[in-house]
Length: 72
Image (cartoon, rainbow, N blue to C red; front, side, top):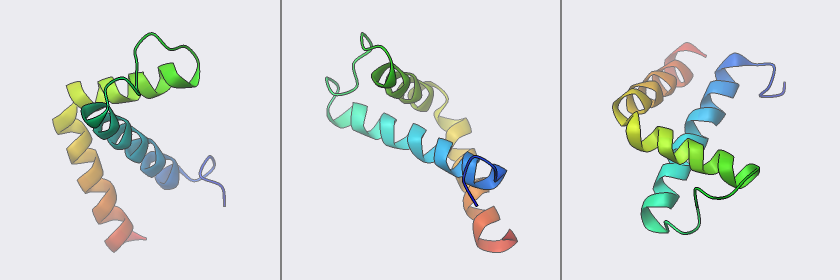
């Protein structure tokens, strides 16, 4: 089943994208530049969400980890 049609997989992919973009931006800031448009702009927005909403993203990651480990 595709991640687009499975809500749990879609949320996992989105959380991993947010966490990865925030991590890459903290290591190499020029790689995720805010002036990019298209896909690069989406990566910058995900990095910004990861930086500003960090506690909520962490809670979401923990919830998804427990749901994958114990609920699936």
